[in-house]
Amino acid sequence: MPSAPSSPIIQSLDPGAIAGRLEQVRERTLSLVAGLDWEVLQTQHIPILSPMVWDLGHIGHFEELWLSQNLAALPPLEAEFAGMFDAVLNPRPTRKDLPLPVARALWGYLSRVRTRSLEIMRDLDLGRAEPILAGGFVYEMVAEHEEQHQETILQLLQVLDSPTYMPAQRRRLPPGRQLPAESMILIPGGPFRMGCQGPGFAYDNEREPHDVTLPPYLIDRVPVSSGDFLGFVEEGGYVQQEFWSVSGWNWCEASQVRAPGNWFWRDDRWWMRHMDRVEPLRRDLPVTHVCFHEAEAYARWAGKRLPTEPEWEKAALWDPTAKCARLYPWGDSPADQGKANVDQLAFQPAPLGAYPDGASAYGVEHLIGDVWEWTSSEFQPYPGFQAFPYAEYSEIFFGSEYKVLRGGSWASRPAVVRGTIRNWDYPIRRQIFAGFRCVRDSR
Image (cartoon, rainbow, N blue to C red; front, side, top):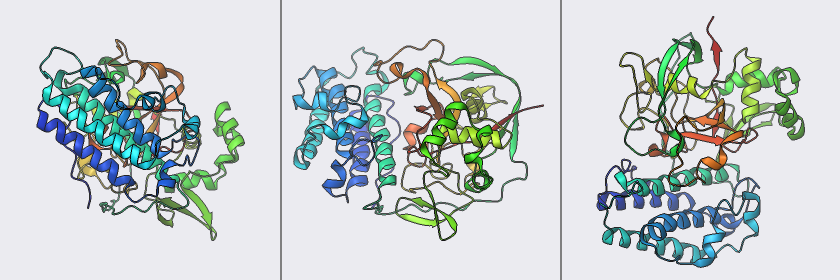
């Protein structure tokens, strides 16, 4: 049976609501890995993704760090786990060499951490004046951290070849629809307010809100489809240097990639794979498992470019009539299955045109869920940025190395895909459930 729907984001210090949120998140984590052999869980299948045992242990360590050690000043339950599951101390390629726990120790650790977290919460003065407790911030941070690692685990499950991951069940997706002939939408020039503006939970890199003024531009109504990207492939886009940046061409030549990460050629045609499901190339699905360099090269081939972060956010969240930002493209109500393909259980993107009720005020669609969307922006702090509650979440990653992705994917949980969420990764990464849309300057 599928997990229960996610509780609303924690916005108060109600112990029952907090416990329910944490338990529902854990239920989903365990359901994703329930049918896997221990050998699969402890193997590092590709260097850029951890063994799933490490991700699971890290989830427990992060919860213990924040809800036990930081809130109650208690010592760690397992002293050796503190260093082992520290993401900064142990880069991904090295995690296979760690003395990772055996099954009984791992599951026991996760259970003991959760029991202690709930015991501490019952005895804690939840009203004490600490920013980390305000509105239940620390509890929502722990919940969303685990949800983000669920998506990381799903990235690994997608690349498994033997055995191929077989979801216990799939949620059916709505059909696509015929889209209007005009594929790009004009976003008028002018100022808008960017960044998280509400009192609810947000990461430090989503704040502070600030004014941005943009010239008019055109943006794709929907993400680039597999059918559109096929044109780039068939016209030799991967072997024509003029469409690539210098770094992009160097990557293309070194990797010898010639198609998105979930495509393969067999029996004189292209096929695509989503977990255990293999089918002839679906032209109506958003292209996925492409890196920034591929997205940028396609955009140049198409006579367009990738959007900047402000361009993406204005098209997604700004309401020109109300002159304020929405929390989501469609309004302020949280993501649900009628407006976006989120919450993981579809195990693939939806056909384009499937969510007309999820459109933004400008009529731009599929901005939340399905695929993370590459932007041309480097991951940089907003004006007025203050690291909270720890520098290792955002601050140490700011710089020119990373490109920003927006919007979430089918593998994202509803709480994580608020419109201001910012993801970032190296421009060569293809394991992400990432696609893109293009923009063009308005003339």
